[in-house]
Length: 224
Image 1 (cartoon, one colour):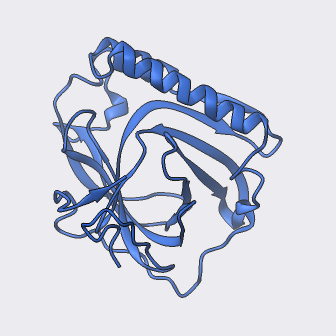
Image 2 (tube, rainbow, N blue to C red):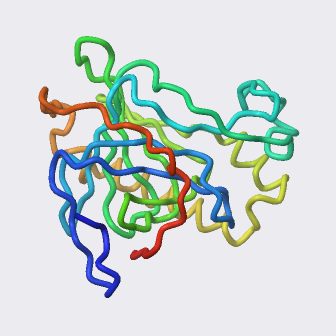
């Protein structure tokens, strides 16, 4: 089932279907992060997907193949890059996204399904297409813990992205406003934090989605 029928009407994926969760470079159509995922729930109010341990993904790396995070912060976003295929290490990730929200909420577990934390990934509201959803990462993030404490993540990268020209002042202001709204949601313990997703478990019959050869294809149709 596709994300859009081309007429503007949203169609929803069934639980167990495989789709792609992708991130483009800011202001470009170039995909630099691609993660095959399994649909857990897809309704008008929520898209929930599971990225299984060991999933083959696409991630950005420096042109010589070294990790982006090995590059000094001052040149991290200007040094030449490429992409590579790599398998997701560690436990799987449950991703939750409400239509229109400028963030998604990820759940992380330790081995043995001991719940660790939520992660609020500030990003462009996702655009659906036949094969999945596309977004743009906004660098700034929030970790949220079971005791309801929270803290900002990657403030240094958010600042550097602005210095490197990836984010103009208007966009940076919108991201800060989104972050403030997310913090308000956390402090009010609204959905999805109150919804018990930390007790969710994947269907043991699910297979790990494969990374398709055309993972970076341009969507034929998109819908908000």
